[in-house]
Length: 356
Image 1 (tube, rainbow, N blue to C red):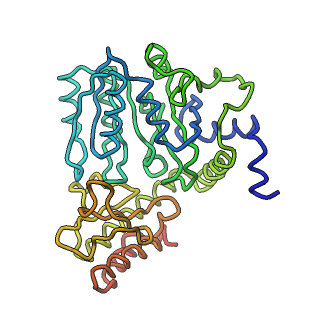
Image 2 (cartoon, rainbow, N blue to C red):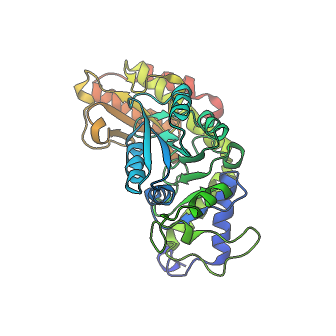
């Protein structure tokens, strides 16, 4: 049967259960996630709409443009939003978060786990630990992080985690998910402002109780994308999530080694918090690096970061030595210099166990 024809066959309950089970195992949670019938930004906005209310103060950590956008959505819902904002070539520190919690006494805390736009990765486990100690509801935009970093939802105590498949999971971008804890559902249900009968309503998509089978597949789930996500998640299980994460870590380390061998500087200042999904390169006085369109996996900065940095998007199937070598070769070409030292640095960093 052709892929096009199969798309007209509705997703079966068995397939839907397979999808939710795969996502639950990916996130190490016993609670089935909500399947979002669209790109992950829809799920993120739905979380903001569902949790914001005039009587709620929410601490929003801003380390990139998506954090800023989430704060705007929270304010639109009437919440009092207090920010911890840092320059986009840094990530937030645990001390800054602790001080903000103590000062503002919020009821919830939100942040982006991995910033692919800036190449930074926030100390997620430590932030969530602080939030839980203060009894805060926790919200993570883990769309980019999942598959490239650890995200054990139940162990860490994450109440809302928005995830997507188009980055480290090498899947489609037309269907996504939000993991919601029992405490997260209570937080939604106690909010009279939470949307109902809306594309932004998470409550309308609440899964059946554990151990029961839904009467039908939730409406609007895109069939082809859902099946593509099942395939992508199955491939992750076959490779092993731990190995997938290690592959992304190796790609990041080799990209850093390559750009340094070319005499370039990482955009992110703290080497302890480099993203495993993207490596960002500071342009500084290198006019040759000011590109307007992507070249392979090398891309210009987005929005206000255009002209300030380049991104090497080594996620998903591009988390490989070959892809990183091609990206470094592209950068060397833009700089009009040779690649031998940089490629040697990549090979030494990657290691024989990941050679491909």
